Image (tube, rainbow, N blue to C red; front, top):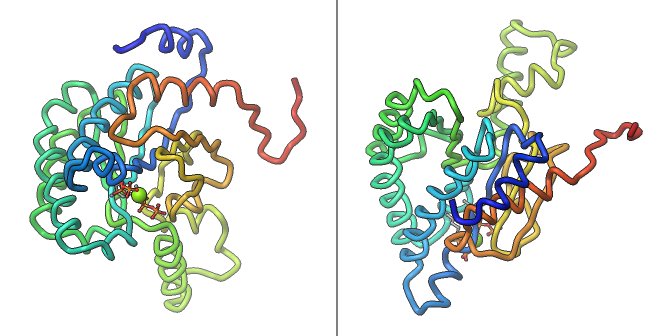
Length: 248
Ligand code: IPE
Ligand code: IPE
Ligand code: MG
């Protein structure tokens, strides 16, 4: 591990965030600065994802949710979309056995039917292959959008109500959350966004109501294990109140 003194500090502080969400942004700018094509940035970004998984495991994080491709990213040039999805297919799928060895169990959150069939099939395989991973969940958000996820959950409840299977008065935060892709998962404790942008960009809108946000200027392909530990350390010094009065 790069600089284990930061990891030692994380461990000494005790409580790591149980669930970390990651907006992996800045691949294109990373490539441009090197006079390379955007695809080169996405390739380097996948290596950074490997480092983030290692760092999350070392920090004893139980769940890592990474934003790999948004609903809105479909609007990018066809060539870039194809390159991105192709790289994901190659990389993530090959990573299956290695992830399992590390104790990582993969899941996909997002609008699966929109994912091209070959990638979808391979994703299913990696989910199956890593089912026994018992150290950390890795949720890959693909074809994911927070607003469309909320609309989808609302539609599902409306259909159940129209069928008479549910009373409007039975709709509450719990039944609503069951209709989200993240049903059954805890909300993120910490959300990290790289590349200096201070926005959520439609990621986990419902789920991040009380998530601690951490923004760093580091471009995603440069994101190191130490950068991950720095984010966890910042989290460990936050005071979470959930609207209540803090009692020291
Ligand atoms: C993140 O990097 C990867 C995805 C959004 C899929 P970008 O491709 O957004 O890179 P920038 O933000 O243009 O630098
Ligand atoms: C967010 O990054 C989506 C992913 C990292 C997959 P974007 O680059 O798409 O977001 P904006 O355009 O900066 O808001
Ligand atoms: Mg971006």
